[in-house]
Image 1: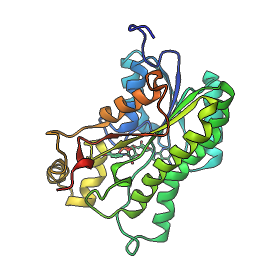
Image 2: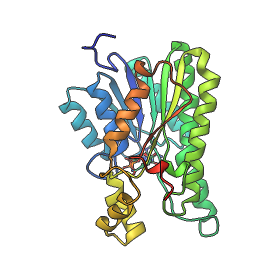
Image 3: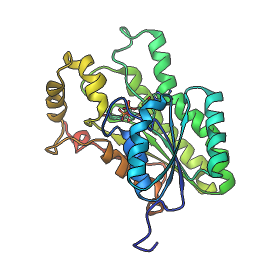
Image 4: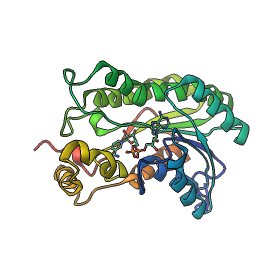
Length: 269
Ligand SMILES: NC(=O)c1ccc[n+]([C@@H]2O[C@H](COP(=O)([O-])OP(=O)(O)OC[C@H]3O[C@@H](n4cnc5c(N)ncnc54)[C@H](O)[C@@H]3O)[C@@H](O)[C@H]2O)c1
């Protein structure tokens, strides 16, 4: 690779959850924009088309190419149609980023069965379904990179009981490892980014209401107190890690996790 090449030049990247619950750097939005800056053509997927408007604007400002598709990634037919429309538009899929996900509060007693089932669909079945429909395409290409977005809540207690989120995010890690080995000989790599406690729009829009009665500063202080580095990361930090794993620089890396948490996971005090 020559130093002047963009790191994803010529590649088509399908990114799920490419919108964000509010303005600013959500993980999916940041991934779409960062990948576009590196030359990828972006197929941006979200259930809510309006949430992708800022993503589209930012990609276009960066001189990138982006096509959007509305899709509920928990529904098989919706995923099949979305993948078909990406193929119709671009004729290939080089990178798949499974970014859709989110938490619900509670342990096994407080959480209803409906919420448990919905969390499994949202965080884990979504990854299964996109892989089900994209892996045959990557196999035919004899190349591809899949990057799944987990969470440190899938490997550690991170301050509150969110048992379904933790279980599904742990599931994403092991799902990725198994598929990585199964598909290694076909030239497909599968890796996981494990973000920690970031300052993303989700904190303002949803989490502060759940955790600190809407007091965003109190929630940020609580989250920062767990992080050794003296600042909080955002979606752009997840995006840089995903970029590395998606790029050819990671050609010998599969079945592993890249933790993006400012050192939080190695603390035990
Ligand atoms: N924000 C954090 O601090 C943090 C930390 C660790 C891990 N993560 C993980 O990062 C990922 C993104 O989180 P975020 O907070 O940046 O995102 P977000 O909640 O701001 O945006 C997610 C997007 O996904 C879309 N979406 C939701 N359900 C969908 C569905 N069924 N089909 C299609 N699109 C759907 C939403 O419309 C939204 O635009 C998630 O997997 C999350 O678990 C986030």
